[in-house]
Length: 593
Ligand code: ARG
Image (cartoon, rainbow, N blue to C red; front, side, top):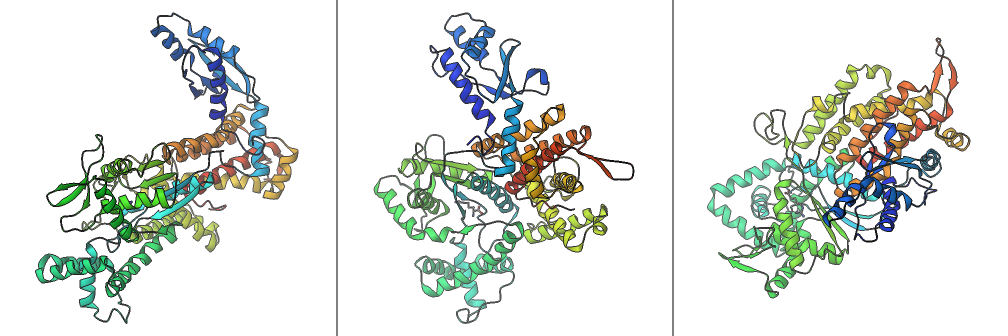
């Protein structure tokens, strides 16, 4: 496969040095193999192997005094030759500096012209990713927006490496709030079975019913009765529930369409029958404990809050449907990996869920991988929880509209409204508006809270979507200036080879070569900001290259006098790899903006 795609450098070096180190030190069990990227000084090579020092320490502990430089030499004596490595040098106390072979790098990068930018090779998995997951009748809020954006990017990454991916929207559509909603619907729209009730503002409807629920004991009683009827699937109540869900569903879909998000809806209601079943099973297995009328289940020592499996009134909970859901996912869907993208406030819930699933024999960590992908809260510019001035939570549609407005202002400020056709302007506006919202979210370490600020995310300097989208259009325009269409580039790539001799060309080439490694890293820890930092580094390294290496030379009258064809190829390779990263990040690059 090394002839059709870029190989992961760290993986290849790891294998190579692992072979050498195991052969050099057969007396040490699992000797450490430490491969790192070298610093900026070309003297120190491109990668390093830093294993000699920790191995010397292992010997020291068993009373043997050795010089790490000698150990480094022993590693090199056992190193098989590999086309990737030009030479190695021992430096300082025992570092091994690795110099990559330029012809190898040219060959590896050039695969993208014939085969496109291919994903790294990984063992295929079937993955279910649970993300977005808003609640019916309650407004979808910025927390759900974070889950939606992060989840979509992880799903795109998993799909890019050719996994089987199930994108599941675990909507809150079965809670006790439906009792009061249905009771209120029956009063407000008595003919709801024949005529579609015109509910335009479900949030207001929710508030009205909540008010009655809190103030009117008679209504409250009816609301409880409605939940019981709903959960026993009484047809008229199911119909009412369906109507309410439909209103929410349409609102959610508007957001998903605008942000280009794909999901399969499978809400809590989907698991009702399965929940009944699993509760019985847990009970029979003796895993439930009575607690003031509730039935609870404990996880393991690492978690100190139990799941509530059955409430004192006999009803099920968020916890019990999650137990049913994890079972359905691992046993019926037969996935190898389940990923939950939910705010950090629910960390305990999920770690307890995983522990309980293990205890119940549903989750087997030798076979399955489960991840809780948590994220911090979104703050307003006042560093307080993101709210409107009157203290209401911000509606996502309003937020997206505002983004569109601000993006247009930004483009006008740069005079782009005069340079672009109305269609081009519209495309640029959407790319900037939705791109900046997604990128601001993804580029922050998801474990941290982040401050939502349109002014910051629309800056055209620094690690922002605007900066990157502009960098991309500039790169794309270079080949255009020299009249290169994609077809001509492909032809050119058969004749010309990528130039990597100039210091800045080599630096750019090596950054591009890291593409598979950056994806593997993100696949492993599920932190999308790695990919953001990587594209940002590509854009910056490209700028450095472009400032010192001409691609197209023009005379004073603007006529092209010289084209460096190899560099045009390097430019195009840069654009292609950026495009793939953009795709994973959900950014829509435009050729003109
Ligand atoms: N609906 C929940 C909320 O808004 C999130 C659901 C996450 N997924 C899950 N399987 N519990 O907080």
